[in-house]
Image (cartoon, rainbow, N blue to C red; front, side):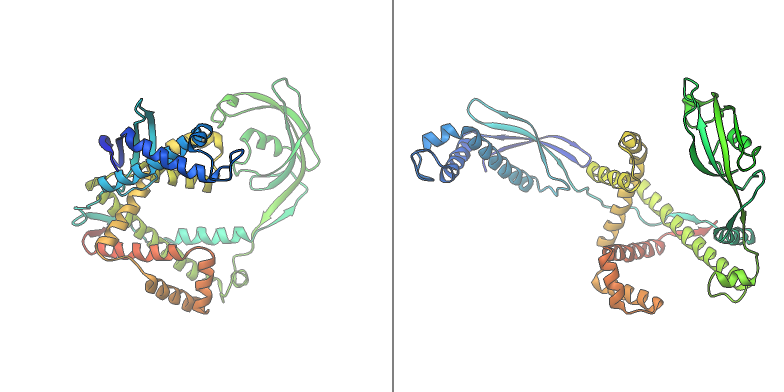
Length: 414
């Protein structure tokens, strides 16, 4: 295709290319478009495809112009990409499209290309592995959390105390001092679910009691407009429930699973905590290694990839529309780091031949099936249905990459 290409701007992974197409090329495209349109349209007094070309071109001038423009620009896209040998990561966009008096066409093509990543420095780093020891206090805390999950709530006919759950009808006066109908709330006192001043009011009541008084909002209240304000509050205490946790004994341990005694449960809890601590330490080491590699190997990141990741996380977190701008601003650096991390792993996997394949996934599924005591085909079907086979493949690849990195860098115990 007869076109003129001029690079106007290269910034990171973004390219801007000025494209000029001569009038003769555009005219030829219009003739071809007119011929195609003439074969398809029906004109009064003529059979389909038999109307004079001049009549068709006059009546369908806009359609022919648009079709010709699209055809020429598609050809131009292909020609530019081939000539510049660009590996695109998104569809290119045309900007500032202009027609000359001679029907020549010019536009600026905006492209994003795959970054060139060499990763010259990936060896010889020193990182510290955090301690992964589990304390007796951590084990006790975890046991208490398990007891708390099995707690029961029993109604009591007395004033509530910290830790009690209350059911309350609460009304707060508006700006004009008018108290609306109360709304029912369930609040665990002392859990930060209500401001302290309201909790103090509730702890003065017994079930069935009502009080109405002014309450001052704290100076550190999240809504700055409400800080320090005093509002009239009406509270009706409907119910008080007190939490009772199960006894810390062998009987409770047996209820928690296949444990003969409290000692057996405690041993299992410690084992789980230690395994989790090891995983967290491993993750920290991996992140520290990537930090070193990111810091010493500069490469560009396509903005569209970062934007796509931000959008994905905003959907996962159900970020409301009014919070999107703030979320995007705060999360963009994290998203860019995630993209860099993924690119480093992909580059090393491809360069060093560490990419997992179908056979590796099958082996991993076989291992998973053996641990569960089920048929591998069943596990495969479940993973396939959940769309997680690709996740398994990426996990194997990532493990191989970090094994390769750990062999070439030093990890010291903190």
